[in-house]
Image (cartoon, rainbow, N blue to C red; front, side, top):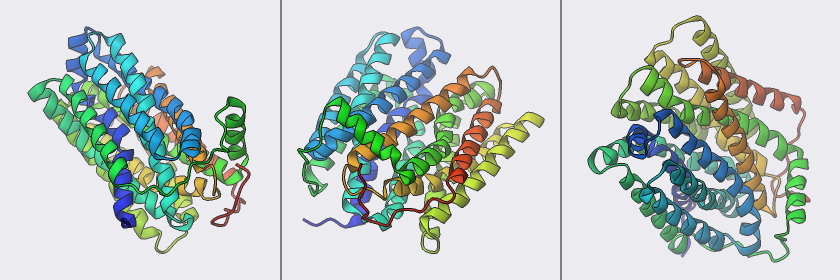
Amino acid sequence: MQRHPVFLIVVLGFLNALTPFTIDLYLPAFPQIAADLGVAVSRMSLSVSVYFIGFALGQVIYGPLLDRFGRQRPIYGGLAIYVLATLGCMTTKSFEGLLVFRFISALGGSAASVGAIALVRDHVPAEKAARAFATLMLVLSVSPLLAPSIGSLIATIAGWRVIFAALAVLAIANLALVIFVIPRTYAPDPSVSLRLTPILRTFGDALAQPQFRTYTLAGSLSFAGLFVFVSGSPAVFMDGFGVGPGGFGAIFAILAGGMILGGQLNHLLLRYFASEQVFHRALLLQVIGGVTFLTLALTLDLGKWATVALLFVFLHCAGITYPNAAALALKPFTKNIGSASSLLGFIQLGMGSIAAALVGVLDLTGPLPMAFVMATCSTAGWIVLRSARNLKTEEAGEQTSA
């Protein structure tokens, strides 16, 4: 049965939201998990970093598999691994076990995100991809809007282990959507090699494509601010400002609203401006917001709500830059889209993980570490974009060697 494109994108958005839910749902339970497993609360951030690392590695694994075997089978396998590893997180008795199972669940769960992005390009023409990715971002943004509050409620009523049971159920629901709802339109390509050398060559060909390279790097640097916020916000708000789990969930919802508004504004802007124009201007505004955040953090003793307001502006811009960067990066490709999508995700996760780690490395207090890394990343993204200002975007459907 033919599915309406918007309905399909919403379904793919739920598939893509598995990882944000996996990250955000258990954040308010950090103190409870740390006490149960006998570690300091500060060490719980390692479970986020481990997930980012596993997720980044999973990106490059599933790309070639999605091109070789079709979209469904690798997603089935990845989600099955995710469910088993998440149940391992639920039953573990040690912090080390939690880290191991989080890493494995990330390797499995990354199949859903890579597959969702590839499926968007399978079902949506290149010239309409930016709007499709904006819808994907809208669904994606619901996870930080809801997840911390839901996680706090579950942890309070039933304990932190039930949070991981809920994530396993969510993955099973996603598996059902892939099986029964998403059409099978992509024909597996047996010519795609799974040997390391050809895979690396395919990735190298994608990176050699100027449009892919420019928008992937600039977009990833812009989007890194989200990872910085996720990793740094518990320390800033819960430890620094003394916000409780419920208040932390409310702040997360407010800031997720900034990203949602950004995605909705992007829909409107794309009616009147080209995706390239929207991305350039949104990134410039993000640079201004990041530099302003850093300047005020250096010169003033920023309070809780001033910090929330400045983060809102920065993440609002990220809600605009992300879908346009993804659409523009993948626009030139008509084959090996799965591999290109996985490389895009790997670079996004890699840069985001590095940016998130910098927040913990900096020996600074309050919102200053977040402000510094956000301003640095967005400015670096703008430099990458401006260095390729004469880049001519590829026409829809143009074939590349990748």
